[in-house]
Length: 251
Image (tube, rainbow, N blue to C red; front, side, top):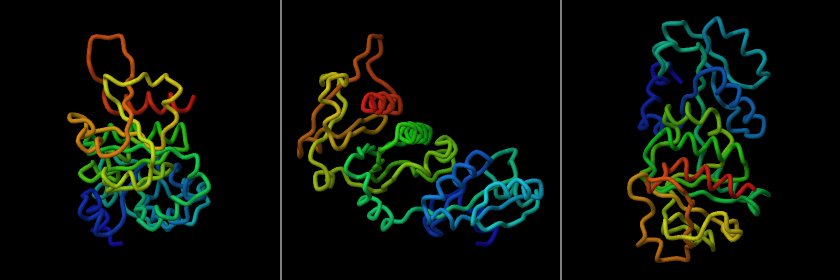
């Protein structure tokens, strides 16, 4: 890929057009390298490095393509004020990869987290980190959700985006074709500490302002649960809510 095209990947339309996204910095590159050992597609990433990072990349022992660039070129490609000197151009997962992944041996015990029209990059990055930490979760994103390959999401995920099975453009109305039992959050629901909370295939979380559309939920069997609190406010940030629920499911 031309260097002039690489810097375009900060925009969603070009990520979609070229099928690549960018990750930047030592930590993210190390996480990419770790994930690439088990995901052949990631091995096709290209690393753009300045001279000061040429030696550092030898520790990776990877099949990544290496391209040396000048400091000026790095600044042009980077999305940060003070670039570290190493950027990876990473192939985006394809729909066929997700279909294959769905049939993996982990699928029988894997739980699905569905996010409906989530908008905040920081929220999505935080959720990805929690799912990667506890493991055995698949993340489904609806249409009109923030792009998970947005640089802000990638940075805030701290590399978790490489380790969580991810599906995009999943319609809420299509979920009953794949799952039988659903749970979602509502102030009037049962406590998530109830043992039954772990008995579901898919857990639904909605937009930061609107939540999950109740009209759509009425079309299939979904049970309401609540995160019991003792404070004065009446709602939780969606990332906090997902994190608490995922922790409860992992007990």
